[in-house]
Length: 165
Image (cartoon, rainbow, N blue to C red; front, top):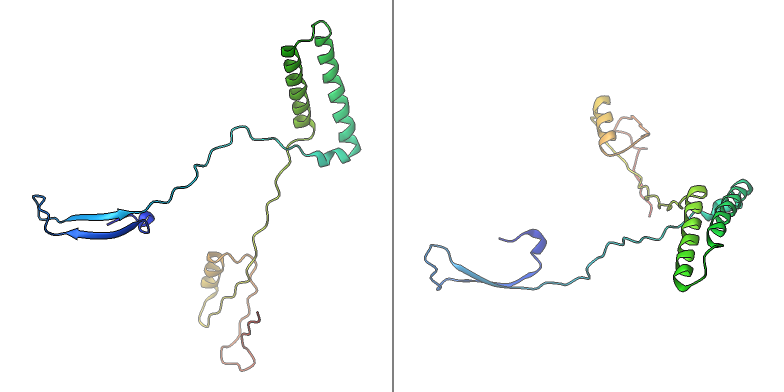
């Protein structure tokens, strides 16, 4: 017996009836075929995508500019007294980057991903003997939110179902 997940991996299985293993069971030999897949790595450093569409609104653009200007003035005051070296340039760049990211995160926010809506499939329920209570149960169980209910006698010639594709 094998788990359903691995049933396609097991090939050429045979029972070796002649092998004596000291019990009433028989030895089984088989070949296993495994498919290797690429290991999926979790991305820890996910890039933040800011909602830059909001910059088209004049109020938000003005607020963003003012906040950036204020934060960069504080950075300039800190860096006026230090000589420029490679390390200080790297530190300066990381400060500029953090200031820009924090300002963008606070004023703009992150862009929300638009999710595609599921395709709505029309549903049809037909019954000749359903009661009103059973009707509510059936419509809620198959996910019909606002069903259109038509009650008619089943013995009518002008009622028919036509499906066009």
